[in-house]
Image 1: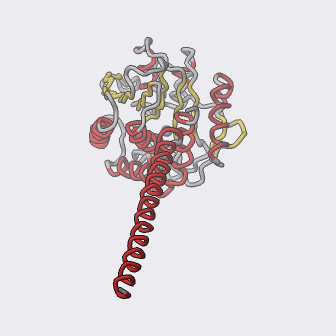
Image 2: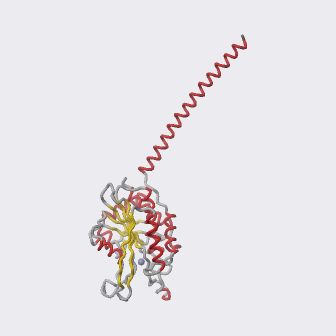
Image 3: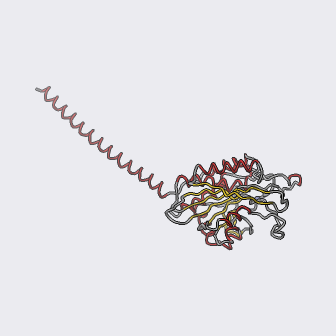
Length: 336
Ligand code: ZN
């Protein structure tokens, strides 16, 4: 009897313990459920409400990759190969990539015809919100390093790490981001050709000298139906010591857009964007401004290697591209 009683007691105790274990497991399950829900919530919040992250290192790799083709001067092997690379790379991310091919006859040597390629990558062909935004840069490089301090270098092509590759590099990384998460509106990445073939005093002799910005002028003149709500042009945005002032023509003709971009720069802490007016530049944005489309030029014109053979990747940095990319991401996704 005694034994039995003791056994019974033990059974009770075990049963009790079993009960406690069960309720512990239920609690654990419930806790796990709450945790999963919380994690899902955080994930959903991050996905839907936070901005995607621009990767400056990735952008810098794109800068290097373009320079590895050699100078991208029109009518050169580097130009052809890099153009094909840009079309293929954008094709991985965009809904549609197309080329506007055009001929340009040299005004100084009329026997010479350049084959221009403006490259366009579109995201959201039928957006929920009907408007489009243009992000653009020129991808060609200058055939002559005519500002090089050494006269022996002045007929050599510019490597164009900053003047050519940097803006394109930031936009290729933007293409990856736009592929991963579509905004409600349409975005077009437009890479202009034949920007840097110009003579510095062409405006005084328009019949015999070549202008700058041939590709963007051709694009804007022949695509009159294309009216993005606004555009942002990147030119020389990769310098290590990046300093972006408010380019004077952009400031005068698209002041509201400029204010928005500088507010975005403040918000993301992009210290390279300073509240000072820079020089007025005849750049690809002018082709659009004169047709009433607000496009501003983000440019660091205080670049000591401008149009020299020293415009090489070592003068540029991922950190600078990161600042510019952060601002673009804030402009595209910050309003969500
Ligand atoms: Zn240039």
